[in-house]
Length: 400
Image (tube, rainbow, N blue to C red; front, side, top):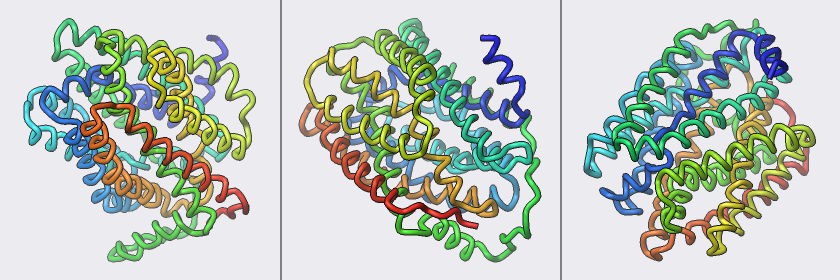
C-alpha cells in the first residue's frame, strides 16, 4: 500500500487527476441491473438500437468535437461532455418508453463525442508526460477503472433492492464528480511546431485525421482489428453478459457480487502476474487475441459454472484492451491532430456498432437465447486476431 501511495504521489498532477477521473467514470451503479430494468420497457432488439443511437450520435459528433478539442481546448471539450453525464441516468429512470431511452442515448452519444480522445490527448501531450509514462499511467488507469467498476457493481444490485431509484441517483452523482475533477485540470502542453489547424480548414483537417488513422496498410489492419475487438467486448459488457446472467437465474444483487468478485480476482491477476510478464506490444497483441478467442468460444457452452469461470478471463481482456492497444495507436499519430484522429477511431467504432449491436439484439430476441450473440462475437474476434497479426508483419513507422 505504501509503494502504491509513493508511486501515486510521484506522478505529475495531470496524471493524478486523470486517474481520479477514471475511477469516477467507472462508477456504473446501474450496471448489474441495467438490462433487466430496460427489458421491462424494451425488447432485446430495441436495446441493441438504443446502443446504436448512442454510437450513431457519437459518430456524427466525433469529428466536429475532435476538431473543437484540438482547436479550442481539450479540457473545454471534456467539460462539455462531462456536463451531460449527471442527466442521462435520471432520464433512463424517469422515462418509461423507447422514446425516453432514445433521448438518453442521444445525450450519451454527445457526451461521449466530446470526451472521446480529449483527456487521453490532453495527458499524452502534457509537458511532464512522455510516451513511457503514458504507458505506465495507462496501466494504473486499468486498476483505478476496474476499482470503480468493482465498487459500483457490488453496490448497484443491493441499492436496487433497497430502492430502484438509488443506482440511477448514485450514477448521476458520479457524473458530477467527474465534471469537478476535469474542472481542476490544466492544459500545459509540450512545445511543438506550428499548429496546422487553421480557420476554415475543417474539411482538410478531417481528411488529415482519417489519413493519420489509416496511414499505412499495417495500421489499416490494426485499426480494423481494434474495431472488432472493441465492439465484441463492449456489447458483451453493456447488455449481453447481463442477459446471459438473467437467463441463468442470477438475481440483481448476486449479479453485482459476481461482477465485483471476478473483477477483484482479475485485478490481482493483472497486477501480480500479467503486467509483470506481458511487456512488449507483440506479446500484448498475442494475449488479447488468444484470450478473446478462448472466452467467446467457451461462452457458447451452456453451463453457469463455466460461464462464471470464463467471466474472469473476459475481464482480463475488457480491462487490458485499451491499456494494451491505445498506446500503440497514439505512438503513430502526430500531436497536432491527436484528438481528431482518436475521434475518427471512435467514429469508426460507431459505424461498426450501428450494425453489430442491433444484430446481437436481433439474434437474442429471435433465438430466445442470449448465448447466440456470442457466436457472432466469436467470429468477430477470430477475424480481429487475423487482422492484428497481419498488421504486425511489418513495423509501422511513427507518423510525424
